Image 1 (cartoon, one colour):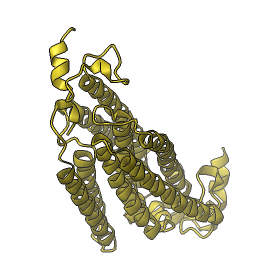
Image 2: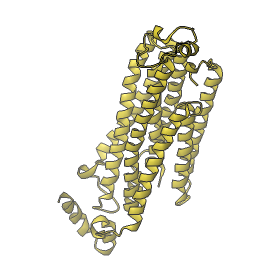
Image 3: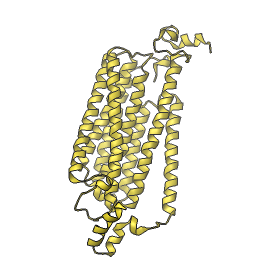
Image 4: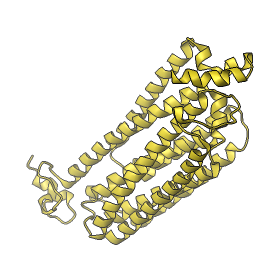
Length: 130
Length: 230
C-alpha cells in the first residue's frame, strides 16, 4: 500500500498483518526443522522445499508488499522464477538424458567398492592436481 | 506531459510535485518517480534470483552426482546454528518492514530505531556465521583443493570438497549481501533520524527493504538445503 495513490495508510492494521506474517514464518521454521528429524526417505527434500516455498511466498506477498502492490512488480518477480524454472528444466533434461562419459573419474565411490580402500585414497588426490 | 491537475490530485497537500526537494524534473509525479524506482529494483532482484538460482541448480546437480558424500558432509553443519540464524533473519525482515511502515507514516525516529534493530540482527547473523566458518576451518572442511579433513567414509572422493565449495560460495555470497544490506541500513538510519523520509518520499527505505527481504528469501532456501536434508 503506497501513500502516493492518495490512500491513507492504516498503520495499526498493517503492523498487525506484519506480526501475523512473522508468526507464520517462525511457525513454519519450527515445522521444517522438526520434519527434518523424521525420516520420510525422499519425501524429506520435497517437504523441506515445499515449506521453503510457502515461506518465500509469504515473504514476497506481505513483507515485499506484492499482495497490494502494482501488478507489474509481481509480474517481474514471477518472470524471474519462470526463467529459473526453465534453466532448471533444461539442466535436468541434460543430466537425465546424458550418459556419464567417464564414471571412473566422476564416481570414485563406484571404484571404491571394486578395489581395496588404500589404492583410490592415494590415487584420487594425485589425479585431482592434474 | 503537462498534467498539472493530475499532479495536484496525487499530492495530499495539494501542492505541485516540484515543491518536494526529491522530485526530479523528468518525472510527471512523485508517484511515477516512486514506481519507476521500484520497477528498477525488482529487475535487479530478478538478476539476484538468477545469480543464486545458478548456484542452487549447480548444488542440486552435484548432490545428484555425489549423494553419499553430500549427506555425510552435511552432518558437519550445525543444525542449531542454522535454525537460530533463520529465526534472526526472519525477525530482521519483520523489523525492516516495520521501518518502511514507520517511514511512510512520517515517523523518522521510529524508522531509525527499527533500522538499528535490523542492523543488530545482521550483526548477530554474521557472528554466528563467523563461528560456523571458524569451526569448518579448524576441521579442514574447506572448498576445492584446500579440503584436508580426514576420516571421511569414502576416502579420496571429490564429493566432500565439492560440497564445501558450494557451501562457502553460496553462504559467502549470501553473507556479502547481509553486509551490504547492513551498510545501506546504517546510511538509511542516519537519514531517517534526520527526518529525511516522509509519506511522499521514502523510496530508499522501501528499496533497501526489498533487497533485505530478498536476502531473507535466499536464506529460506539455503537453510533447509544445506542444514536439514539428509
